Length: 357
Image (cartoon, rainbow, N blue to C red; front, side, top):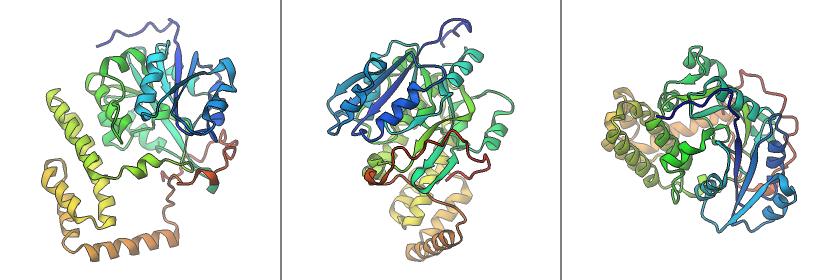
């Protein structure tokens, strides 16, 4: 385990920002970092082979931003390049189309000084579908408060995940030496790049600090092609299998298992709405020990006659849309429909009773 840093020693923070064809949004992103009440000690943008004007926009910020370019290799490779180039003790992540709120780094530094024994922190955040003038908190603060029991950290990241507190990459700040120790982001992984790394950190350093206050804006109305491109369920199974094996080797399967259960049940609900009998039965066969008996029995029943189940799901969706019981928002495919200046009023936080989308 690492030795805690002295609470009075200087704290340095590098903002690492991967960007791919983010020309329309990167200025907004960088301005949110430059406008921090506690300035970043270093801002690094790693251009992952953009073919638009990303380089021109970033370089227009001059010496305030360090610009790196690499051939297109994906977000993991870009983040790793930024980590390797950083000179600060702490790395804070932000994507090239999202934003930080003005006190993000100030809140991070305060949390680090209050808990110098911890090596990583995450926080609440805002989800924004700006074109629809819709905002919501990523996590219900009351729910998080109950889980924290007056503390400033979760006993483990796996505990947080099993209670649906995954957080968003743009709220994470992690000691650079810890990222180097666990091997940084896994290059070539089509999906789950961030949570895959968080799991590897959690095996060695389970406790994670949490700031129950939104620190950033996760934009839903910009292109996010990676989540639409890689829908092959095999990627999901490989991810789970890899970490089940790791957890067993680390004697931490008991900690990981509730997280696996949540990931599986969430995925299966989507499969039920798609009438995907094959993959539901595959999960019931292969991962049955991680599911509750009640949920497994219900899933099996719903796959007996998929057309009827699918009809029922469509009726429920129609009722949901018609009566607006729950508003669904997703990232849009076409970034040309998005106004990159449309969230200027987001310093006004939403009602904390907002539903998570």
